Length: 288
Ligand SMILES: Nc1ncnc2c1ncn2[C@@H]1O[C@H](COP(=O)(O)OP(=O)(O)OP(=O)(O)O)[C@@H](O)[C@H]1O
Ligand SMILES: [Mg+2]
Image 1 (cartoon, rainbow, N blue to C red):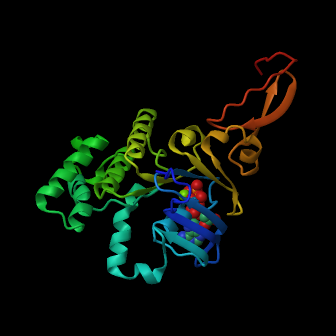
Image 2: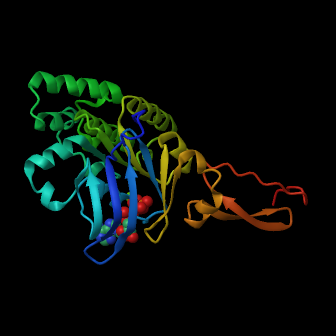
Image 3: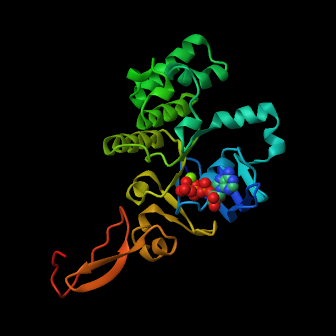
């Protein structure tokens, strides 16, 4: 929450300055990235496939380190040297939760209940506290009926819920989510959006990678738009996204859609979730 005294600045939770990342094979994934995330902010990382969203989340989660540039988390440099220290790493990992793009990468226990208990047990909570955490987080995420099941024997959407529940079980301040709506049916997507709103109301910070234009304005306050060359095209309020059609076409999130009206072939920007209407004086629309 911002202070009413303008001389008291709110420190960013994360601050990236000119971050560049290359994979071992030389593939550039991020190129000169700079932006900051305030406490309680909901930030969407928006961009086409391969632009670097997942890589950036891994850097924010302390799972990868940049080739150049600086990353600060909670006011401290986020470097391999600092996170090599077990105590520092444990404090950091308690504050930052990660819901992976691929739920299978996150789930490994024999039952869903064991999976949910893993984080709280690791935090050193008592058996009674762990039990309480498991049942409250299972209720919050609607997975009580799955507790005795094996995580590898449930559906993709159910896995996504379990993965989110595991992340919430350690009560992190910041939640990093990679394509959270991808495996969910429309009803589950609505449920997730409601849950994210509730978590936002209790002060959680979200950084969410997505290319889903339909939900971005509901899950984010701020949108970081990536170009396909792994640079940032714009950082803007989510409410301004719809009026930036040109930008969305440039970064290949909205594509030129070629179609036919009567005998006329023409193209116009076509996206999912961003309203675009277009009029034709003539000829009238005909089935072809
Ligand atoms: N393990 C890896 N080794 C080499 N290159 C990789 C690796 N993982 C990703 N890349 C490359 O890094 C770039 C960024 O990938 P990243 O997974 O961060 O993109 P993304 O924006 O999350 O894409 P998507 O929307 O498809 O999930 C891409 O060019 C990709 O091919
Ligand atoms: Mg990705």
